[in-house]
Image (tube, rainbow, N blue to C red; front, side, top):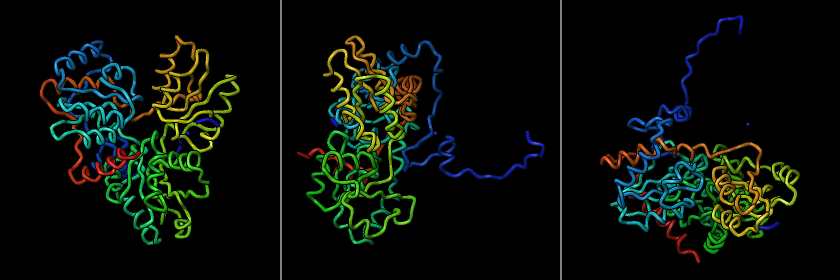
Length: 398
């Protein structure tokens, strides 16, 4: 291996939706969740033929006051207005490197905008075009759940041995927890280095919130076994684990995952190999362990892009990551006779990332151009202090 007419009258029931159901229905908001539903003001119609020109005019009016960041998973209609593109951490650092920009418009999801707010100056204002652009993975670990997990580790007598390592795809609250408890943040590019550092500080790692990146890095890149890893389920008493299991484990993996990358299966790999002889299978480390084991190459979003840039003409590739990026890469390299296909037959966009569309971007830019600050993302000072500490530990990694 290389790198889803009755004959009787219906009785109406007085059923009260749960808070989560209200969030999903867009009828409530949770300020401590990645989900948000408010979008004050009227959005332009998506059928407005002048949307592109309106976005261009508003951006030109703002000039250097605005800096637009576009994540790789954004749709093309949004990416065309990005000043820079990249993964979440690269974009946050790009924003920090532009202190003259008063407004940072982050075309991504909520946790990314939080990271940008943590790394930029107090004078800069980070804006998310749609507050409903959250992240299902980040939602799978709340501050309350992680605090309860730490209590479980303490009762098992192992907390002092545990160093938390949190994936960049986590809320500011989780990053702050990590900072308070001597841990670090990681990206999919430097997860191995982060784990190596963590094991120099302690005997065990609590990896949040993506179980697959943690497992793949520990087993594939660091030589651990699957038996060295246990899965902590925040919805079960004591995480569904015994004290002895926690004592024996090296990697305590949080039960979280990416809804896009989790779709890929070994069957997807086998199917594409049968359909396209000689195909290279390249997947993101957020995929399941068995998928990573069946792939030819494994790497971060930036690694995937670089691998395709370096690939010889005529080569064939099946990519296991978000569809917007795969489609963009297929179009980009078509002239070089590189065949690039989506790993799964089922089309799958990141639904929350795709909430950032052209109408929301136009509304955001026009509001800012008129002097109206909308959808600002602000991390409170205490949370920012410890989240930044965890990020700085990552930046200091060799």
